[in-house]
Image 1 (tube, each protein chain N blue to C red):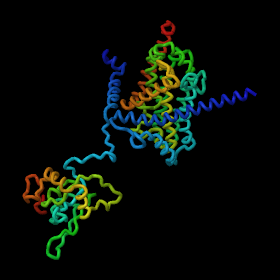
Image 2 (image 1 turned 180 degrees about the horizontal axis):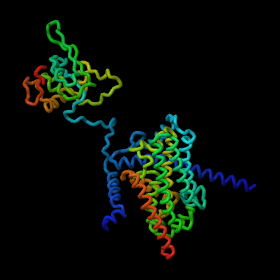
Image 3 (image 1 turned 135 degrees about the vertical axis):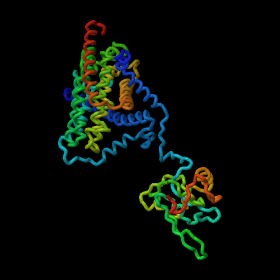
Image 4 (image 1 turned 90 degrees about the vertical axis):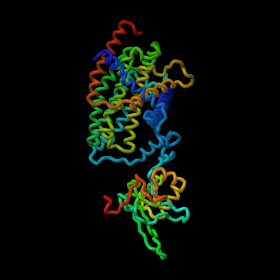
Length: 184
Length: 332
């Protein structure tokens, strides 16, 4: 043991350095976010609770029931039931998402040719029952109204989802549905 | 019959003193937990308790109420009489030491002439509570905690006692008030400078004696869950907590009385004779938390080798040194 080390051991210099560090830290600003009181704003592009886009003209869901989202969904948690109306138009009877099975990959949003399904920035949706997480069409439209809306959506979509709704083309980095046979 | 009246008056004064000290210490224990959580929280860049009352100020009261009304679970395979009595032994050991501590001049419940010895004896007795709790719970974690506590207390009791021998030699008394008065003619009115080695040994041994981090092997959350009181719940668990924090206050008080000049300060504060004592107490308690927030737990064999191979020889050296200085009349 050299003299320097001996002095270090006897006067506990390393412990003193550690103590100085903790004392210094004590007077820095705590990083705690007091969650229910101060909420953390979601980062742009955050993939939260699902919503169905409400069309500005008709006030109805923009979804046409093509089923691309259900087809691309890796956890197969989107259920779409369509029917013919009296004037032989295709109507979406039910559009349901089982949120508890969703992995929030966002492929449904990328796949949708009409930009009709979105992931909102809402993330506080805990509940006591599983039923509350089974999203029906009405609930999904309400999610759109409450948590997304058009203003936020435009910026959000243009920036992160590269919408195909405008030109129906296939942007280069977009997940493309090629039918079930060719999927792999 | 003036004799009886005098006796009754004397008893009434003693009772009043006991109530005052007990109340003050219980309040300090409650807010020591709050102070600890806040201090360590801020040292870890957190906030600590914030929700009960402004800045969480009512947190200890909420904790107390919660502990009091919690279900009292007694393990079926436990040794019941011992299980019941263990927390009480722990608490009695801690609380009875309060009787001999002079909080300010002439304010001490029992001004006995073996005060220091009494405190050491009581802190040793308190560790029986821990050992018995570990044994009676009939759980391997508690038992390990109890065993560790037994070994640790035996090792560090010696260093603690020896580190105070230098103080006894300088003061020539075991009475705590006399020890404080003996310090008045020393630099800063403290034994700190002539007894610097003894004080260092005492601080380390006192932390080990009260089972605080970094010597909290009997509790060792990460390895023994909670050590000796794993099986305790509700108010019985609370009693161990009160005992631990009272023990901290006792050890800090002994440190103040023996090394830091007791109730004396650089100048007298009028009307609050206990101000200096409590100020020093808070600083020492803060150092407990500060050390806890900084240092990781000692390994078991390191703990033992520190106690037996470093602290005890150091304390013995301090005794010899103090004796030589005393004989050579370097120290008054």
